[in-house]
Amino acid sequence: MRPSISFFIPAYRCEATIAETIESILHTNFLLGDEIVITEDGSPDGTLALIKTLAQQHPEIKLIQHPYNKGGGAARNTCVQNAQHSLLFCLDADNLLLPNSILPLQQQMEKTKADIAAFQELRFFSKPSHEVDFIWKVPEETRLVDFLGDHRNSGSSGNYLFTKESWKRAGGYPEFAGALDAWGFGLRQMMAGCKMVALPDSGYLHRHGIESYYVRDMKSSNMSLKALQLLIPYLDRIHPEDVEYIMGPEGRNQWYEKSSEHPIRLKGENETRRLAAEIHQPSSKKMGLICRILRKLQSWFCN
Image 1 (cartoon, rainbow, N blue to C red):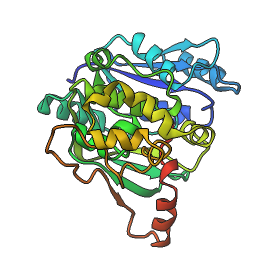
Image 2 (image 1 turned 180 degrees about the vertical axis):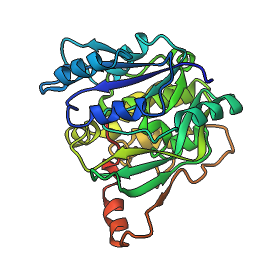
Image 3 (image 1 turned 90 degrees about the vertical axis):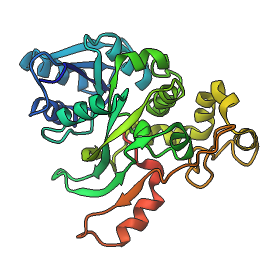
Image 4 (image 1 turned 30 degrees about the vertical axis):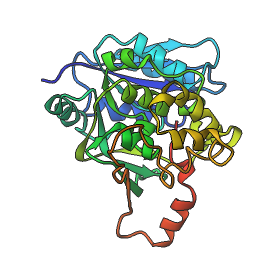
């Protein structure tokens, strides 16, 4: 029997997807003693009414309402603050767990003595059939140098298992960062010395191709400038040349999006970035899809 887990979901404008998300938790991943904490973040659609109906059907759901939209970081923090267990799993309201996937993830966390355990593969889908369009595979362990060297990592997705203690050490999710709240939280965890691992040959389903939280925010704001605000408290740990780059005219408007091309290095360390992610596609897909994917990397993350 594994320890009890508080699954949590930040919910905003997700009436079309959240029922399926909850079902993916309850179906083979939920054990007696677990809970599902949902913070409804002032949605203008029917999200709140739907969650209330689902909560009546499933007493395991704990619903918290924000009186107005506070943003993803605040919604995630409210979930954690109302969670009763020391292990937490954040699942965005448009993503899906695969059957029987949480127990081995928890066992990997325990085996490696990690603070954070993620699935190794983000399996991106856009069709109701859940057919996988492409796969993003991350290393079995993400070091700080890897996290800074490429923004495409487990921390950016935010859908992983972690300890409440690591949330406290990180100071919670940033509430000013818009859709970079998950990346910012991962950054804070890594800077606080938390260990992030991935379970080999595991995955979850990550929805793409919709007008998600990340896509909406990316269209309306400069992600590199927003990421810089998150990095500022840690500039003393960044290589001086890279501080000059991200603060200067060449990098400040693009360093985050182009981190795979221009990795951010740590000061005074000889470690180099490993390949942060690999992209795969099912063999039945046409090669032309790769080109479309590579042109749309910035819209990978949903929520």
